[in-house]
Image (tube, rainbow, N blue to C red; front, side, top):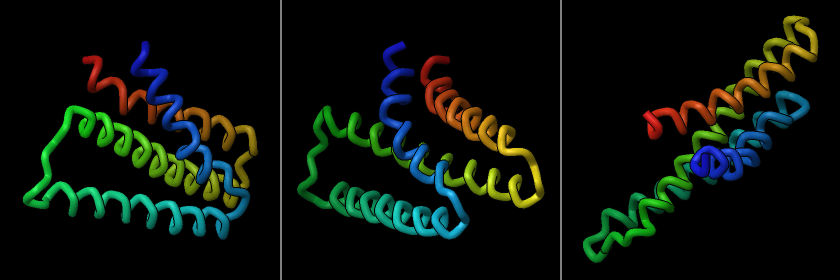
Amino acid sequence: MGLILFVIQLGIVPYAVPAIMPTWRWWLAVTLVGGGLLSALWIQDSILRSGPDFRAEPGDAFGVLMGVVITISFVTGVVVRAATLVMSAKGVRVRYSVAATIAGFGIMVAVLVLPILL
């Protein structure tokens, strides 16, 4: 239960930011800025870890886990919002888009938690 709450608390904001963008222009801007920031952080992490003087500490695994949860949450929010934008362009009702957004978060939590619990 603690792992599920951890994933929900850490993943709600990175998921919600792209998922609640009102138009495709806002969605594109958030995708580029957020994706660029996450890419820069992962590149920096990779460079630091590949250095000859890097010594892994026990907390490093926890930091990588947090980075993975944030990244997957953000990517899931981007994909879900892209799907809901397409749905709204096709004339689907707003309540179905809201349902898809909520279901997308639940699926993201399940994808992150189920492999660890099984």
